[in-house]
Image 1 (cartoon, one colour):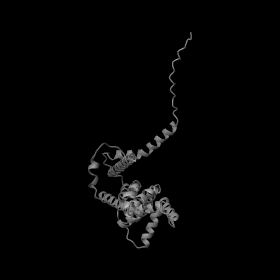
Image 2 (tube, one colour):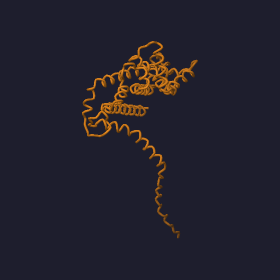
Image 3 (cartoon, rainbow, N blue to C red):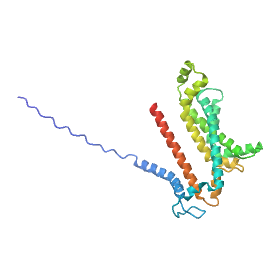
Image 4 (cartoon, one colour):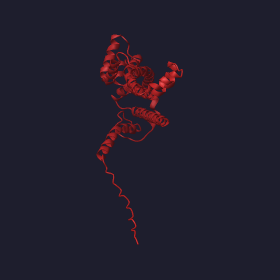
Length: 278
């Protein structure tokens, strides 16, 4: 008679404790984020400060009156309108021109392509002080009165390289067989661009446009060289803080920051939806 021994019950595998690797790096990362957010938090907080002093440095109480009185100052309203209109006009012009340049550099080979890339990289890496001084010298040499038009031209000139490089990075990765298939089906050059190429590079175009708008609306150095008597919002902030810090500065900064965050979130959501659709 053969006896069998029941197999011993299998022991449950011991749970391995995941080592807390990179704890120091995570702490450092959060410390850097906190350092970056701290000035913004102070700005938002002091936008609600019920101060009677022109120097908005001490907390005196909570109030919403500065939001209600935001546009009571005509000089602030004028400066803000100047900044927004210049930024919008600059963004439209820069997006069109930069997209064409980016497509040319990303999709085609031509003589001078390397030099063109070098010039665009030089424009991106050049200090704004150098570009502002060179633009001022050009306008003075051409005897051009400084004002709204010179600011617009300057903003287009320094931001077009950013749009071109953003679109170029998107255009380089496109599959040319998709456009070839559209042409084989009878689509002309304009139809192919409108229905095939443009939708494929649209994420790069949108990113470049948002970057151009952000660069334009908060530019101070180049605008200071080329503004003449025209005052934009950054110039108004600089001028007002030399004699005090109006609470409206914090309020407007808070609203611009909130608008930027909203646009970034919407862009991220749209990108995820496009990725899900494939």
